[in-house]
Length: 139
Image: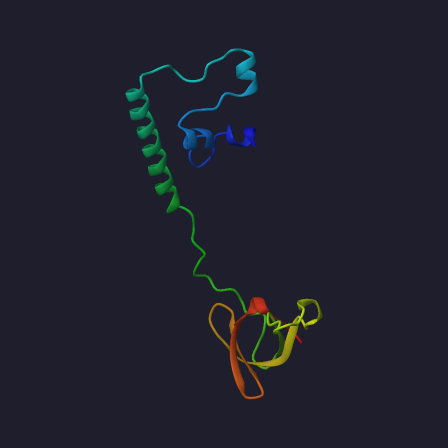
């Protein structure tokens, strides 16, 4: 982890050590060679330099944030279609019942409607339920 924190990141141009601590940490080879990192300066100069560096990195990250294409609004294709029979993952244990012996899935349900972003409306014996595809598997 020490090596990872000492390598400069491509997006910030700074090391995680510098961004978190305001200075580079001394590595074992620096201690062996008695090499001091950084230049000695007063506390005020250090604070001003640190504030300037962090503000520069912050601006650099803000600019880069808009270059990354956002895929949050993209909708994936549905796994199930209307009329498919599916099972629903059950989290109900019941009072005094062990989870090991309970069925993992209940159903079958019939898919009646596909909603945006993968929720499905399902029907079983006249009762309608809406669940996300993460809780559903094909019967």
